Length: 252
Image (cartoon, rainbow, N blue to C red; front, side, top):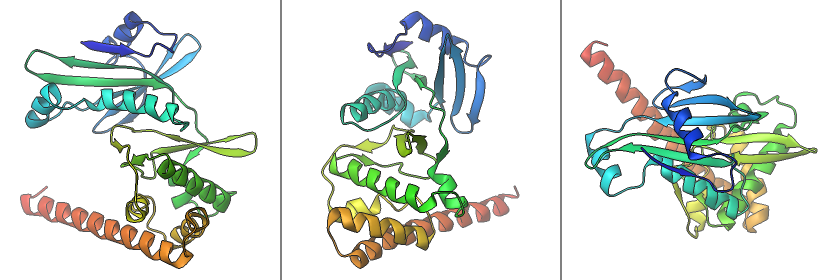
């Protein structure tokens, strides 16, 4: 197994190796789906270890010879974000299990961040205290990403952790393996909001705040932001319906 440990962390390669080898039998499960996330206590530190699903045959070949693994990309992108002044849980290490001709599993290790909420709570709880204040602060944070030429392709409700620090809201990106670092035009910026919420009222607030920052007409910003949001929602629900039909067809 190949490892890289952040030189700025207080951890050694043998510690990371031991954590990975004990992943299946130890640790507190935080999430289990396509990927699995567990929390491990190491001294005074809580480490978040994400085990990525073993890819299909084609992706195994791609990850072994042509592309960086999701774990390695997460590690490198986290370091880049921090260099650019964007918050993300501190990257500790990544590990990749591969042979000369095959790619197996991979792991990304970071400091675990105990967040107060995620963007998802803003979507599902409109009566949340400081709802509009948090939403506007989040919009300013997204504008900062765009100005720093960071296109977070998984900019979705569960991938921004929110903490209240000294009366202000701080935002931390997670699930980092899909990013572009490039200058973004207006359309690309607006499309980056498309996966966040289906609620037009929230889009209105974000459009109002973003228009001030980009110095464009608010209605122009809203129309473009809502266009991409509506387009995403239609595709999402169409895909969901097709899956339901397929399951009915095969009798599941």
